[in-house]
Image (cartoon, rainbow, N blue to C red; front, side, top):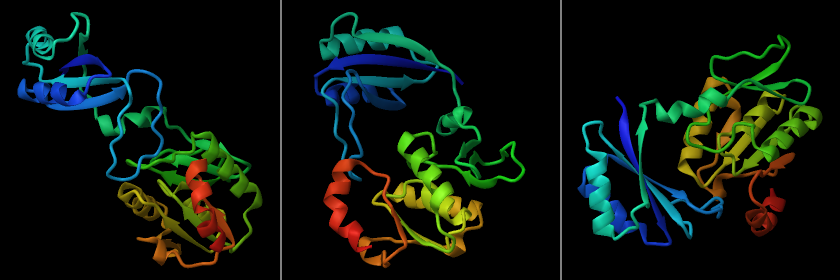
Length: 244
């Protein structure tokens, strides 16, 4: 079933009144996006920082009258006449849209990361099947790729590994695939820990993986610490990571 989407340019206006007005007019989903160029990197769980300039997308059922809704919002919110545009949106399985661009990828000489159900062209490959769910980490980001290439080239057999800020678990699970004896993962995002459990089970690695539910449960020390997170948090966490 297709939908109507109204895209509302809010600029620096508080999006709250626009969100409430859209809900009152029957919106079934709302999304906020950056209308400028201001990245918001890794907010803590529960935080919802907003950009200086925002764009609101409001999704309405196919039976709605988008022109009437747009006119009403323009009047109620006192917006310029060109602040709202209407679009038709085809229905899709939105949470799986990322899969259309996710293909088997090689890192280094042996390691391949593949979406579930796909196989690499190399029959001798070491394969990690991955579904990141709502967590960060598919291998497409440059720092993740560099870590995976390093692991393929340098990981010592039977190492113990800590993946701090694990996201989807891609680094810890890749290390286990490449011969690490055990890996421990930690992340402050609950969705990451859900993804790690799922991916560990998918790859039959759960028996060699420890999921630390808090920093006090991490343990160690470890032969190798992986922390593919931003420079600011790394600087803050340096003493804690050094202990491990």
